[in-house]
Image 1 (cartoon, rainbow, N blue to C red):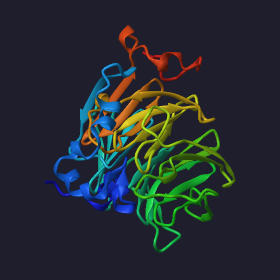
Image 2: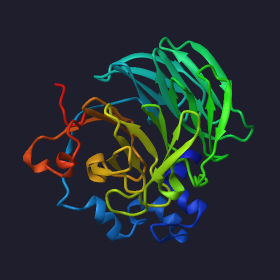
Image 3: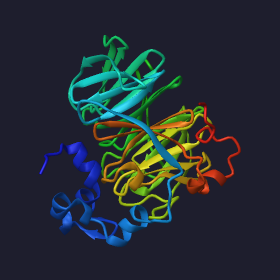
Image 4: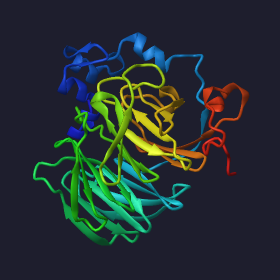
Length: 336
């Protein structure tokens, strides 16, 4: 059996570690989950999302490329991609051709980019590099026991989710601490499932233990939340979902879940649009797939591969995605 580090362990099995059950499965099955991963969910639960022959993903795989090691995080960087693997950050073009590589410290959690700068998130620090791999600046966490999970870089500052302190830390883009942002619902983060993104000056983050997506102003004022627990589309399954959040160019919220991985779309008001890519189409497994959106393309990282998906215009793929009510959907409007 392959060894996994603490972050990956909690990403997969944080519910059993923290609370004892996932989808009504007793913690006594923890050992079985390592030996027979496919057996840790009830057959009915797996069938509902992975073996539903009536479901056809409205998005199809159009290309992919592999990197040299397991992907820890990735981000769009203009027309290129920044990909983090163990102790290394690499820059690729869209065809998977390596254009630069530089060494970094261990346990990198997340990547964000802004103009020509690459921001790297570690458990207790942030480092900023230029595209040549030269360190521009760095700063340490504002709390001694921080365990940073995800972050987003905006014109209004850098917003970092802290899985240990269960809050959001706001910094200036130069690294000066501004404030803590706390949820009126109280953040419940059983594992490293604390995604965050910014859409048109509004911060959206996952309160994954409560199966919520919450929204805040750039000043940290709470605006509201949406989300419910459940297996069906439009709900978040398991103990702690969604894991990753990102956005489309027209401001829709894209979520990625673990347990039974799937990628879904929501309006900023919380209205469910559709499941875009199901577990089968993604390639299976139980870890959440990190996803980024570039125009009409979805770029998805899994294991050591970046996969690119586009809307499938063939009749067999006509699903709720094509009739969700959004008149100008960036993902459905092909640029090529």
